[in-house]
Amino acid sequence: MPMGRYGKTVSRRGITGIETAIILIAFVVVATVFAFTVLSTGVFSAERSKETIYSGLQAARASLEPRGSLIAFRGGFGGTPTATIYKVTFIVAPAVSGQAIDLTPPYTADDSGTDPDISSGAEYRTLVSYIDENQSLPDVPWTVDFVGQSNGDNLLEAGEKAEVTVWILQRDNSVSDVDAANAVTGWTADANGAHGILASGGTILTPNDPFAIEIKPDIGAVMTLQREVPVKFDPVMDLR
Image (cartoon, rainbow, N blue to C red):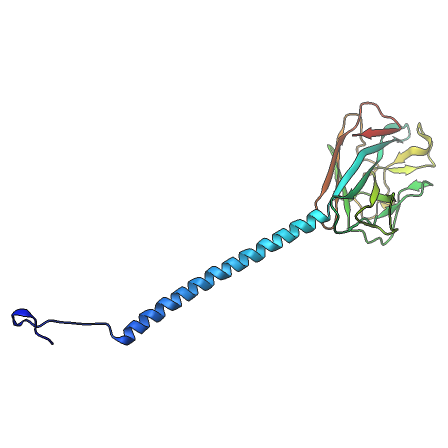
C-alpha cells in the first residue's frame, strides 16, 4: 500500500472494470424492463381504446330512430266489449348511414281472420318488449311493412323506412263488437308460441295508463318509446 504523509499507510480501493460492467448491465436491464412494461401498457391501452371506439361506431351505425308519431288503434276486448288499445304502429329509419339492421319479423298480418299470424321458423334478430304498470313482456309479436324506397328484403338500410306494428292483443275479425273489424282477444297457447304476450287474463290498457315499447336490434342501441293512453279512445289515436 502507498505511504501517505507522516508515514501513514493509505488505503486506496477502486472499482474494477468488471464491477463497473456489472453495474452498467444492471442499469440497462432495469431500464429495458421498465421501457418494455411502459410500451406494452401503452400498446394494450391503445388497442382497448380502438376497440371501444369501433364498438361505439358500430352501435351508432346500427341504431334506429323514430320518424313521426306513434299511432294507437282502438279495439273492443271481451264479451261485453271494453275499449282498449290492441296495437301501435310507428315508422323507424337508421339513425345514421351505416350498417343494415335486420327487421325480419316473427309475425305477419293479412287483415283476415285473426291477426297477427306467427311465422313458423322465422329467424328474427330484433326483439320488441312491452312494459306497463301491470306487466313486462320481453318478446311481443310485431310485424313490419317497408314504406317508400325499399329493395324488397328485410334489412333496413340507408334511405329506407319501415313501419313497425306492435301487437298488444290479438285482433279477431270473427267477433262483432263496437269496432266491428277490430274485436280483440287475449292470446291462446297456440297463438302465443314462444313469445311473451298479453294473456286472456292480462290487464288491458285503460285511459291515462302509461306504457313503453322497447325495440332491441341485434346490434345497436335500444330505442324506447314511452307514451300515455289518452282520456278518450278514438278509433285511431296519434300519441305524439
